[in-house]
Every structure is written in C-alpha cells, then in structure tokens.
Image (cartoon, rainbow, N blue to C red):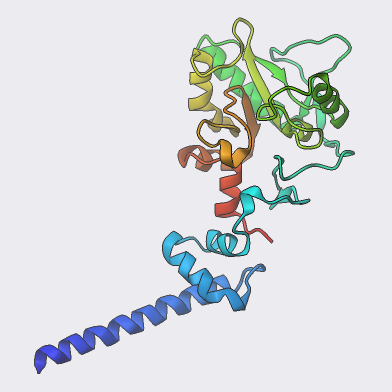
Length: 255
C-alpha cells in the first residue's frame, strides 16, 4: 500500500511539474506579436524539441521559410537578401563611401563603394591579416542594380548557383565583399588567406556567407571569397556554424 501511495504521489507531482512547465511556456510565448493562440499546442510540441521560443514560433508559423518568396528583406534590422528576398530595384544604401586606405581592385571608369561601417571593420581585418604576412585585397563591394543587370546579361549560361539575378544580389546592400589577394585572385579554400579569413573574419563582424554543405539553404554554391558584414551576431553565427538564414530562423521572430 505504501509503495502504491509513493507511486501515486510521484505521478501527481510530475503532472504538476508538467502543468507548471506548460504555464511558464504559455506566459512567455504569448508576449510575441506572431503568437496565435489557436496554434498553442503546435508551438508547445515544437518547443519541447527545440527549447527555443522564437524558433518554435517560426517553425509553426513559417514551416517553409527557406523556400518561400517574400517581399521582406529586413528582420529586426538584419538585411536578408537571397533568391527569395529581393531588394527594390531603386534601393541604394545611404551610407556608401569610396574605398580607400586598403588594397582594392581598381577598374577603369569605376569607383569602389562600400558601407561606411563595413569599411571600418574591413580595414581592421586587413591590417590584422597584414601582421600575419597576408596581403588581402578587396575584389568587389557595393554593386548597383544596374551593374548587376549588366553582369547578369553578359552571359546567360553562367551558373546561377554563383550568379545573382538583379535585385537579388547581396552586393546591392553595400554590406557584402568579395575578397582576394594580389597574388592568388579570389580566395579559395586551399589558401593561407582563406584559412586566416575563416578563423578570424567573425572577430570583425564578418561571416562566410555561402559556406560548404549549406547550398540548399543559401541557394548558392560554396564561395570562399564572399563575406558579409553582420556586426555583433557574427560570433554566434560562426561558433554555431550557421548561415544568415538559419540565424534569422532560430533567433529572430518572423512576423
């Protein structure tokens, strides 16, 4: 009899703990703007697997986020531009400046422009590389809609797993850079330059935008030369081997 009472007490205690866990979950998740009370049990089921409130919301509300076309390109001030998230054709960043004081490719009748904050951190990254006897060179930065259209129409047969349709290029944001060296061209995965960038770029707010084995998420093949400035979230992205898309899906409420 005593054993039965102990089992019953344990069962009742467990039920109370479950109820408390559910109540705590409900009280937290209902504060989010994208919360739908009719989906509460789906959210809770997802949360039990992810232990991540925001990701639970996104998984239920936007189950096909990676493959869904959207006119939204800003998520909590994080700019997401990919094959499903285009910029308006008339989008021009208002904080562009001329590249100077670092090595960059000079092209006839063309100025190299970049976001002001990005240049500041890119310069620091290049200086760090120089102390390690690596001479980095900026191959490309901001690219207008018109410039991207020109590149796109140069060769229709070009693999679109490497080439962006006008309006869908990160370069139009002014936040993306292609990095090369003065002696090897665009950085490749088997160079000392890339090894340095892979291990250190995040310290300056940059992430490798199109990593290997993430093609189904980013929509692009592995590009060891293409880096994107994301600021303070770069460390979390780097340490968890995430793409920008995965970071948003896991940590930013999609409304």
